[in-house]
Length: 369
Image 1 (tube, rainbow, N blue to C red):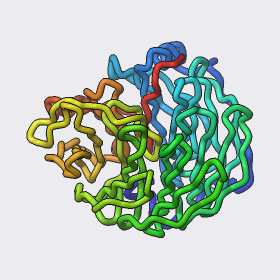
Image 2 (cartoon, helix red, strand yellow):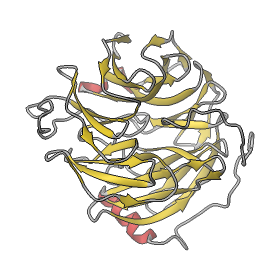
Image 3 (spheres, rainbow, N blue to C red):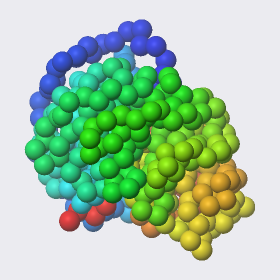
Image 4 (cartoon, rainbow, N blue to C red):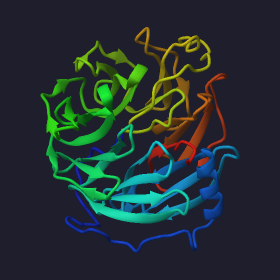
């Protein structure tokens, strides 16, 4: 949930346990720039940002950015405190966890309309989609469960118990049927077999795991960002064994994989080659690369060498990151209510784009097909 989202919730303006839908559905009518938003989504040049806000000023919108122009193109109201966002592999559905409403909103990217609001557990904080696009898994931070959602019927299944304070999730592994759930207060991740909906023994990682991404050949490598220990822990999904942690800097909150739609807690595609990264590790010639937000920096990771490169100063406290599909630009959502593009070849941040609220998550869907 980010560096400040872990503070105790002393005052809650919105108390919606058990509420299915708190706001009226929002279609494309009356949404500024909705035609441009849908057009960009079709071309795969759109990023979506969750404006989470704060408990005393809850965010309500998902903001769309046209990556070609670097401009905000519209917004969609989904519900209270949108905390995470993911997309199906065909780019047709956008999934948003509305933490203040205890539900998962499902949007059609062609019309920007909310197709369904599906009840989850208490305070859903992360969502991931299976590689075949048929299943979503929602991590419920306040009741220590994950909720499977059938994306063909848009119905929730029985909650699965995991560890304490689950706040990130990714799906991959053999046959794409393994989920890893980051248990913030257990300093561990819980593997879940999605064929049986059974949780396995927890895997010890660093302190306060806060983000998970999956990539590598056949999606068999997971990366866990440990907020409290300033490290990233790789995990082999064939053996479910962790490798030695990699130091990345203060307070890592998000991971993205080069050439993927990655973002907070999402299930990333296979890691591809990226451009060279200045004085950091070379990431061309087939080397797998990940990018980590840590404090005010964007940190490159060479996965083959298991080393971190020279940090890129973003200029504000970073919360989430997504890398475009060409692997050329990282889009960093910051707690100063902006998204900043970073040229990964020149290591240069561009002009920040105001998005409002407090951005909590960002995703770049693939071209809609």
